[in-house]
Length: 440
Image (cartoon, rainbow, N blue to C red; front, side, top):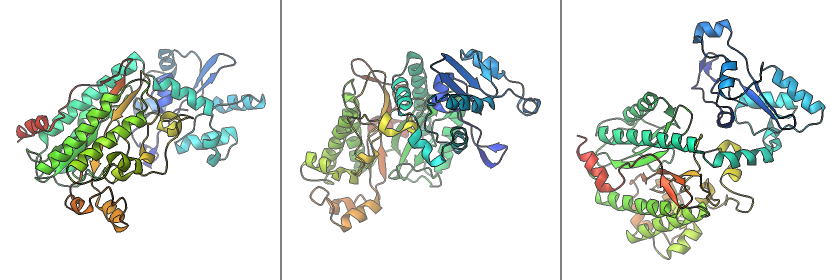
């Protein structure tokens, strides 16, 4: 099923349209209100949708017909959308199994519920597991054409990040920089791959509030990426000072994060479990935090217990492609894990790791360790003396208002290891300070 237009506040004022990624992958048509049947038994593919009427042409202008778009996609049979229900009923009458993917849009849930005579709350459990696993297997391994798009998305994203580093100044508001990112994304011919995270409150992992004013001494965390015209995502993060220089504390923590990033990316190779990449990165973070007095005790024991998640509450990375969190709509347990390696959903930190399974050549993923000092988490754990053998709470109080640091790039797993997608973007504190010193 393709996606439909979704009204924002009345029917004809819609949110930005984005086609379903699996529909894009197989059919390549970015147009609302389409569906398709792949009939394996009768060896045919049928696209269902309606041609533009005169009212559509008046308001939207003449475009390629649906039949022309279908021919571009290699499809030769197009029927009106209303006939999709008729075909499904025929299959059901013949006792043929109808496979479908779990819907995430309300419109598609309602339609599927009516067509298949299933309650909406049963659609997820009735979705075809074999279909899900087949799509995940195909979409996980990126083709040469897909890698070119992902390279392009990462490179454009890097250019935009550099622009932000060069233009940020004390006194600006976060929204001014967020607007520059969105404008540059549109100007590139694509769009944002996800809502911009541009904040001086970097400890808030997915902070989409843009009302803070930049002040000397603060850090700016910019997590943003471009989606190309074909729908492929870039996802980069850099953290830089509002002023020209990092403070000594900021530089210490930044280097800890950068060491974890470097160690993690160097481990990427076919056969390596990403869970092991994550745990190794966590140990690098814990060792660095121990070196500056925020943690103590045995590092391996601390990570095994989950004490490091006081500072790193999320996962080190995720799969990426047509979705910035690739195929997350199909189920994280199928995309990031296997029947043999299931996700730890109880330990704080590990339950947020989206990818754990062994890597394969052709996978595209992110590496994004960070350190986040969350005052509310300090108060909660300190009140019960949680992990007191590993966390130096007295020293941590001195960092209470530190905020957060993240570093992130996109990587392709190759036959012999990996390579970064896109282009180099300032990573070290020296590189970043050189850019900031020229900014104003």
